[in-house]
Amino acid sequence: MRILITGGAGFIGSHLCDRFLGEGHHVICMDNLITGSIENISHLRKEKKFKFVKRDVTKYINIDGNLDAILHFASPASPIDYIKLPIQTLKVGSLGTHNALGLAKEKKAKILIASTSEVYGDPLVHPQKETYWGNVNPIGPRGVYDEAKRFAEAITMAYHRVHRIDTKIVRIFNTYGERMRLKDGRVVPNFIFQALKGKPLTIYGNGKQTRSFSYVSDTVDGIVKLLNSKLNEPVNIGNPCEYTILEFAKIIQKLTDSKSKIVFQELPCDDPKVRQPDITKAKKLLKWSPKISVEEGIGRTIKWFKKKI
Image (cartoon, rainbow, N blue to C red; front, side, top):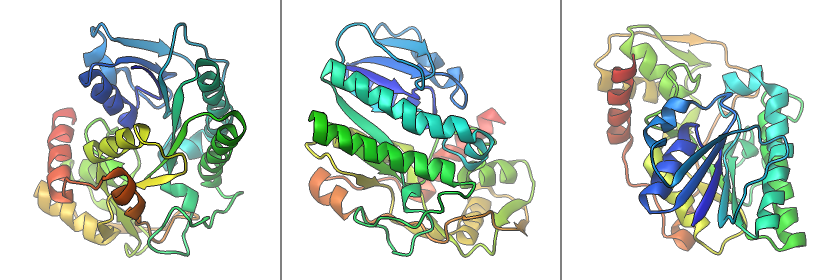
């Protein structure tokens, strides 16, 4: 296949580039590098079947030749990024998604949209199934990301219904692994960076809020299975093993052999109290479930962080 990956120089996007090139496909990586990094794809630049295009997908996008598939992963994904870049986040979720869908229509390509567990907001249902409509504050600071992704889902389904495009929507839950930025702002890189540097581990709130963590290779497997499926409606991809933030901080302390203390700060506005995917749909229809334990995945991630610090 000939595949376009927007946001391909980002964390998950770059791992998708690796995966599809490893399977023998041609990959076009498109990124404006606002939050992505050339370093994430530097090892691919000499590959004959790989091409990098620096472009903002909120502008008109075009690719010469045929395309078999588009994976739209362009977007800031960390709270520190989308709070700093609120308008860009809204534009890439709306205009960027519109442009990607238009290209899919033109090329008669299937398209997979990267959505997020954030469409569930601060959920009142636990665990979260795809049938849950969410509890989102549309005018809060996190709303720029949440609503951008919710709009992306809505326009994707509209293109599917009106133009009969083969669309996929993956709702990605917390994913971690190699190539996350050291100061990404999310839980895993924050804790690992702080632990390795001997700094206090910062917990926002009382630490009783929960998260579920999926290692990047598991998430990529789920995405590829969804792309190759006949499903068109949203599918949760994540690891249902749930931890409180305090429990997770202690896991990081143990695996890094860190003497860092744990400190508590004020909980940010609209921060979700719980987050756990119901992956029944993915198990049944995609025959997918995560394989890498948190201990193994975090161990691999710590090794990578040690090389970067």
